Length: 264
Length: 349
Image 1 (cartoon, chains in turn purple, red):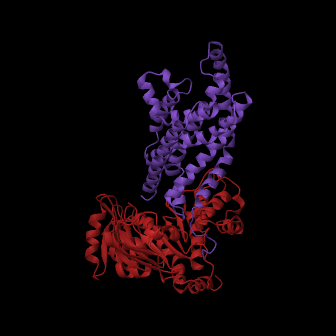
Image 2 (tube, chains in turn green, brown):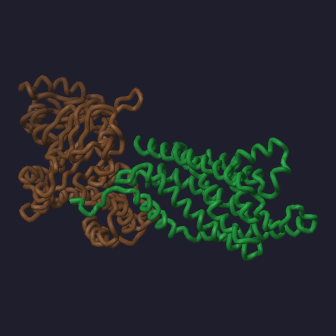
């Protein structure tokens, strides 16, 4: 009777993404506002506004402040949106709208559901970062073609953080108040202490160590390196390896927690 | 369905039961059996056990469901029905025992099995933000079905679920009955070999339940293998060819509704309601009036049940003995009585 149903395959991951696209069609306005308004606000107020002050007071960074700061904003925005998309929406899929439980009754496996969900987040982040890059370029915040690497770098950085957040979201049984803590005490400080506005060498030693632990600093260094070119090959490999480690461990944890939650 | 009368909601329960025994498998079901080397038993469980820590939810049950049967798990909340269903649905792993679904092993072939199951969970998992049609489409995509295959299928299912007019409406504002019908339509998107229904009508008003039963009865007539859990004895009597009564994770009885009633209850039940606090004393006096060894009286908080062969006669004798209940009625035995007899408790606590 089920001749029309194809045998299960990896392509199922894309069916989860397709579902999210259908959901996304309903909220494209808010996604558009986040995707365009946030970069405009940051680029104009801090990149250009604060940048004018910095550039007029003996900027020692070697490039205009906007060129220095914009790749870091792009990366930080990617990480923040990915963290938000992996927190409440994933929790809702288990707890409130229960769509993951619906998916688990089909040939989809918990790992495929997890991968599909994260793939959707990655695609959104990639698109967002492209828009961010275009806005940077429109306001003269780019100096060389290598800067396009900011987009994949930001996506990797975002997913390195989003994957463990997804694991937490799949584990939480309560109403998700823990996410407030996550955003207040992890995500926001990470933005402030990851060399976004100035080199981490300006920080006291404890502050530098916070930066070294944070995946955002490694992503910011890579993105800024692509925009300015001040970074060496060994450093690039080191940053990439650190981000990949976060992502791989996070993905493993997320798949595990999806499996536990959906087989209860 | 041609050889079988279409059953509407107005038919009596006895008629439904009578028909359910003469239903021949539909041509479609027969063709299916011959075209695929499918096992005769679609579900085969031996010593099936599920524990959560120290708690044993399912305690070593044996279940065998052949193709085309409508099989039910009847029992109160917490009897282990849903845990059993989640193992059969190849979602939750078994703790011990053995389980074969469609001749396959849920551990190693979960996705292959789930591809051929339809699942109606206890709690709806519909996407409320999407339309009725989008919910069906997306779900079909999870089974790897193509757009082209889904389009006519969705139209058929909308028609079956009586939701054609609401096809492009969002799910959120639909009534509970409509959402439930959509969940059932969704579960049929892959033409499942087995349809699993966990408490399909819990929480619905009587009218919506009858509409749903009619739809499920049609599926049964088409030869779809139905497996359902319920704590409503009328639902079990209407839909199940055979059922098991579960209590505390174990199977306490098994058979067709008529067999269970014949084996564990009397033909008729007289219900007598006395003033509050007087039911127990009245039952004691009535107990003396019952002569047959199979006849007995059961005291519930609000009434006395007399399990007898002739209810009117028992009622007359109670009146002759000077008992004057506030109200009384005589009815046929139901599965509720079977459950009360087997466990000493009613189904809905």
